[in-house]
Amino acid sequence: MTTTAPPAAEGFRVDPERLGRLWRRETGLFVERHPRSAALAESARAHYLFGVPMHWMRDWPLPFPVAVAEASGNRLKTVDGDELVDYCLGDSGALFGHSPAPVVAALAQQAPRGLTAMLPAEAVTSVGRRLADTFGLPHWQITLSATDANRFALRWARAVTGRPRVLVFDGCYHGTVDDTLVDLADGGREGAGGARTVARASLLGQVHDLALGTVVVPFNDLDAVRRVLAAGDVAAVLTEPALTNCGLVPPRPGFLAGLQVACRSSGTLLILDETHTLSQGLGGCTRAWGLDPDMLVAGKAVAGGLPCAVYGFTAELASRMEAAKRAAPDGHSGIGTTLSANLLAVAALEATLAEVMTRSTYDAMLGQAADLQGRLEAVLAGFGTPWSITRLGARMELQFCPHPPADAAEARAAFDAALERALHLYQFNRGVLLTPFHNMLLVAPQAGPADAARVADNLGAYLEEVST
Ligand SMILES: Cc1ncc(COP(=O)(O)O)c(C=O)c1O
Image (cartoon, rainbow, N blue to C red; front, side):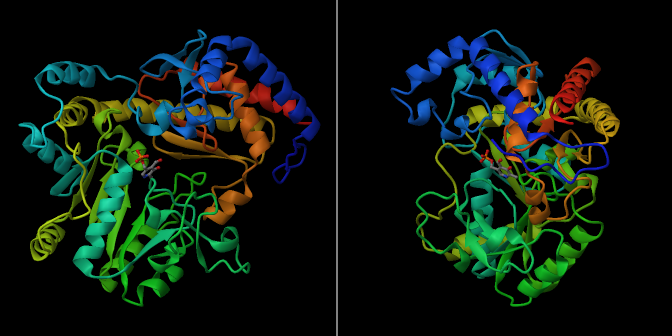
């Protein structure tokens, strides 16, 4: 195992040999303590690819996946008897804590009364009103996943504008939507041919040239956006208000306002994917930062963790969408799925909007997240570690660079797989579950100061062990 230490401040250096020893020791500890998960992982190989029902479950930086016994609030218990403080929260699906009581009650009430009917539930009217109140957009559609919502949003955008291309930012992730699984060539590094859009190298089975329909530019680069939009052939810009899937890349002051102006003046729709940035506060960054998108997508946590997502849009766009649908021949629109807006999902959505995703829930999450950030920063400062914590409400990211990155190229330059996976395993073996993709922590409303102290103490002990 090798590591490239981050740019070292005076006195702080990661020792690759110490890191390697720690990794081997922690791997041994993990294996010793998880015999039941090991046995389940082995027997599951008989029926599942890589021994898991969804192959990403192998992407955790653990020797094998742990099996879940139960999860509640901000705690997750494994079949081996661990009780973990959960800062992954299903990668946002359980952002408001596992199994919120109002959602559990709504499911228990709805389940015996029908699960799916491909007809609207009685509750959809009040759900629509709540979505409008929460996010500030008047019209909505409901899907099964944020991936679906993004895919459909892009299809509507092309339908109403008649334009072929979409623009996304380097380092983006919007689910498994082909149009968005693209990168800048050469990791987006300047002077390395970075202006070219290419399919993500890791994609399987990719046969279409994604660069025909999508163009990628660096986040925070308004000039690059303007240059692309000037051609007048871009239907929509799809972005998160801050990139959360390539480390955490916040917008520079004025970037989002400039993006809105560039979109409006070129007739391009602006679609904000708030699936992860729901962490910022009630109504996501759109509400918190006074943004004005044409469309907004929210998924994962929006129905308390049930498969459900939503996309909303302005009244003007709604009438263009209805006109586009009417103008098309009868038949498949390529938008929607059979189980979308099913009775059970709508019940969970209504309960979440009414009783879970509330201001008081956010107050609790944001307070605890600020406390955790302060503790982690104090530990980093104590070691003179040139790393940073970037926080977006209840979501934060520990990055191996002194300041938040400005774009994906900078974020990638700070990645260090060996340091990262060892940190995850070290925290796991001491009762803390981090989100497997990069160093992301999501703070549930149930988290308390003792939980934050545990993560910070673990970080301090880790730094002590790996540094010279
Ligand atoms: C910003 C963003 N949008 C959309 C998605 C897709 O969500 P899902 O996998 O639930 O479809 C993700 C998944 O991580 C995401 O991070």
